[in-house]
Image 1 (tube, rainbow, N blue to C red):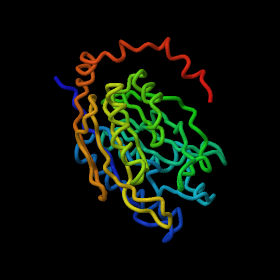
Image 2: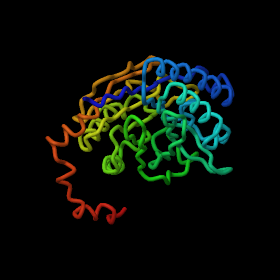
Image 3: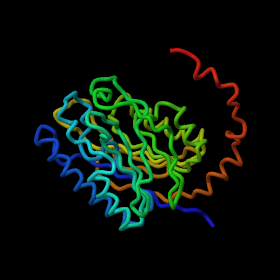
Image 4: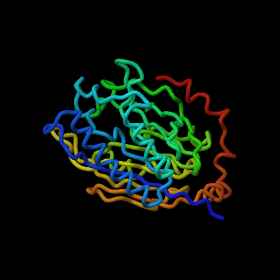
Length: 291
């Protein structure tokens, strides 16, 4: 019997722009909007749901302003507790990416993972932080993550999380595979142009190299007053052979779903023995080479 798991991704545009409203107003409206998609996912039988990077607001890293610090919450905090209620209600695992503050003045770009009973399984803190290109100033806001490449064992599947810019680094993607991930989610904030080709390329490549499923989430629309580009949506799922099996639109708020057959993982690994044929004893220089 196939191990089918129904998974969902939510891509959304902000309902209020940063030149229209204060950060806390935007946060409140965006949470309300996302909750409607969480409920839609629950009613659709989604078993594992992933929201977009920094889901409760705009991609505020487009500027460097301390006013956005005020959006951060501890984990568990009000928003994670709210999402835990929906996880329990629908028996749904939820990946909740947000702005975390574990201590006053300390911030991380984090994803909280809730199980189908609403229990907090743990956190993934973004490892690789961009501070490049106009409008991606994450090192102003966040410390680099310190959680390692965790895999969370849920009722439905073993899942990993890799956050946005992380996807440019194959080492962590491989670590998630070696740690047993069956599905890796990548919540992102990616604009059209230079990164769009890589969006279509890198994550299916991770799926091929590590023979797991990937679920890739991007936000939607232009966020004012910044001019860093258009968040082009096109969230998608790819299978263990790198084939994109379900794709969302470029410009619409959307819940994208796909039924993933986890038995495909073993089937693929019987064909391509990448994990058997690895030679880790030859790779030590990767961590010794400088810079």
